[in-house]
Image (cartoon, rainbow, N blue to C red; front, side, top):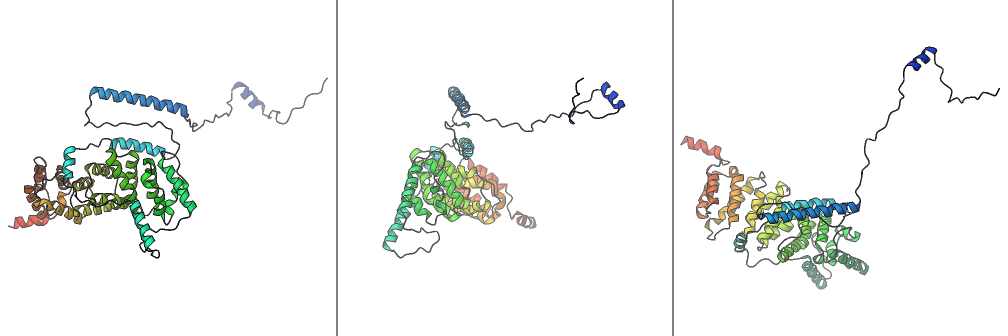
Length: 428
């Protein structure tokens, strides 16, 4: 007989009673096996080849849809949303936001139409001697001349430009940055460019990069960086000396605004005070703001939220300045935002319209539209005396369709002092 093989301790059966053994033989027991399911599925990414195929198919469908619309003779007045697809594959984190901005631009900007009659009417109210437009280059050259003549002069103003003798290596480095920004389309920016807002003589450094020669995409990235890192008074200088001249030159040359420059205007509105002082008010004070410029800049204001205090101060300033046709466009845009305006601003707007009681010129339709918008929104905030004065104004400045609606609104208006006026009428 051979030896019996000893079982390992792990292989030995557990000692159970006879009753338990018989029970286990009759009934099947379930084993405690629990399947662990993955709570979250792994993210699946589409490779670049498949993405390009999807984009090309989408573009092909878009072209077919556009051809169908053209064959059907769709009118230009009908608003259509056009989605533009880019050929390149972007790697930056900001590209997704730019794609969303592209869709928003198609909705807010591409549908802007310019009325030739309104454009001619506004040209009649433009200043014949507009203020000269100053750029960063003009101020730099002026300061260089001043420094050459007065070597010991120190600028006491905090906002003034301070010129320093630059190291040739620094100048050569930023000349290289200039060459990059001329051809910039997308991707990362040089680190030397990103630190410019933190420099004490940032305007002098910025002048070396030659902002006039920047590409439109570089102008957008520069506006984004300077808006985020500069204080309000310094951002105002950048908007006024760099961004505004570039926007006006682009509109004058191409009769439409580049998408990146439009996005730069929207980004500049993140500092509303600097935007109003550096772009909007200088544009109106120049005296030669065209209808195209007013509509495009106004669309930026209309589609973005602006604090009430900044809007009120801007409306007060516009109401007091010399009239141009563009003033009515911006006033109407601000009035359509339906702010709870202070009485001081409402009174200034009333006096703004009353100034035209003795004006012999034929006012543009935009003026009557702004007047109607003001009456519709703030007829309850004017006094009875102001209401009567505005009714008298309608006898001097008349429009065949709009004036009747303005008169109806004023006649049914419950003025802010109506409670004081009604007891006097009952007493009489």
